[in-house]
Length: 404
Image (cartoon, rainbow, N blue to C red; front, side, top):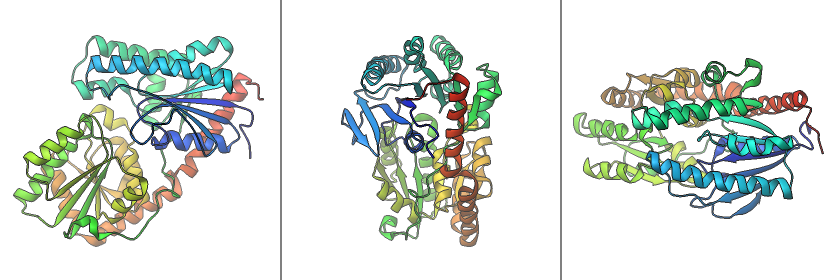
């Protein structure tokens, strides 16, 4: 059914390229399947270097971007460059293909500036709330100040500019209402559910175990707030204190701390037990995760992570993997009995939880089955995609958007 036929949508995302950004790509595919014309503006990155590409009926426009920032000044340079290209490409799309709605995905909370330039021409703005940036800033820099106040202002202006807001969970919806001044009816929860046709359960490939009995897997960003350094220290505790040398750890992903984390691995002399892969194709990722006996989410406990839904948790559950993570609100909501929960930021307890699971195969099996069933029946993208289309239908009716 072509519920959105004739509607032209331009999705703007900065922090990841498309189609690598799985949530954005799933949203784009859903909107396209519902009849909308969908264009995406995203940065170039390794493996995604074409300035224009048509994939699965979706038009992708990519722009250059400075190296990923890890300081306030670096962010200013990165965001300024991105904003220039987003404005240029959005008007190029408007002239050549037309657009009715700009769908902005943070971070950063600056894409509303692109939308403001199109508002006089009757265009609408949908804010897709991926990260709570004030909390993210505090998690990265452990301080407030001038830049923090700017981020708070940008968040308020983003919510004020938006004609509709999409939240990835109930915690984000509450922020949109209380801090952003949104009416509850204008905020729609669309979770980042995994696509089960992509996350297929496959036979394990024991070559990834490097001759060891067990494999523990991690997939995600390698940044300051993701806690991968703490995971390495937990692995060191397992190897040195618990004298467990029958486990190999695969850490999949990249980010601003990637080189530093490899240096820490060398310093702790864990090369025999840890493999960093960087970004890898989906097929290889699936092979690693399907082989894993346990998957981990070492995100540190802070106010951002407590309120955020992590894609990795959903992916682990979709593949029927038992999980170890720290005890946080949204992490517990997503995983429930599919996970065990370590004491907040206690690396030794995290390590012991991994060992406890590895020594209980029946418990691992029951936890994995619970997680898989929860995704199939409640949390997969099949369930969330209908909510996204319904939200767009409501916006179109309320704003009386003209269809082509």
